[in-house]
Length: 354
Image (cartoon, rainbow, N blue to C red; front, side, top):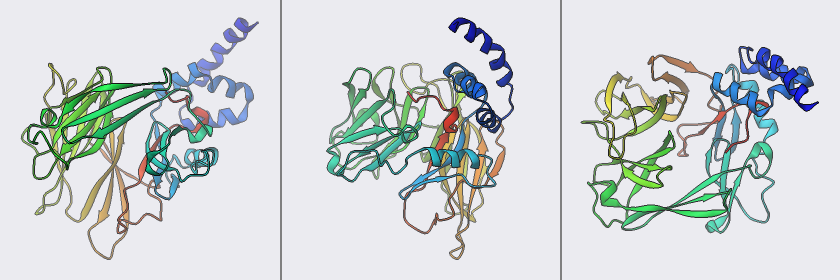
């Protein structure tokens, strides 16, 4: 009977997969239990995710989660996420003040004061995810140390430590003040800018397959500044980099690399385009996904507090104004961190995060 039922669902799945938008899938789920059973199956969701990119569902700030607002097309999905998820983390043990330290792929890492307790949780499911990995890093005087925890094995594994001078030849071997900035992820690797004033920054990589840190290729003839790395398919990587210029404003440089940019077969970055940006605005990177960069534009006039968002496609370099992403309470004049993007699928169309 089970085999017959599964065979009977195949034609329906092939019909439903042709729906044009994520909103149509959501309406189909709500309209019919049979449709919902097919659409929420893991195999169907994998097909759906291969055809439809993720959406910006909202932003997370120090004050909580803010769903995307109209006229943004993701506003209904953002509201559904806000209603379905517990972004107050009320399910975490009490007493204790829990602070969110990081978020990736819908999973949040939270700690109590003095880092006595760690928790990895999934607000959409009000508890622990099915499977996850945690990376713990320590910046020691002579080296960078990391440990990786797997929820499957319940064990910590050590990443091969790397000295500061090996990761950044501009830095001394012993240093007390260093910073890792602009974390990015692509093809199973994490990227940071490693710097210590007054030395030049250098791009470094944590390769999760090799469990090792590497120095990486910097863009040629350009200082490493604010950057975002995106996956372009077939191992290709793209980089957006905001370069400051006090006289003419900012320049957005776009680079590409044909393969990985570390190790013995490291690819060189190729400058694809330089895009002058108006000096009338201050520019910040909110994040990148699906080969696109989301920037926040703030007018430099002291009396103006209006904020705009712009989405830039790597392949076409087309710019698109995006509305409803930044919450109306956000003020660029308040010295708080920029909102963190929450990118994903509506709750009913999400796979368990691994």
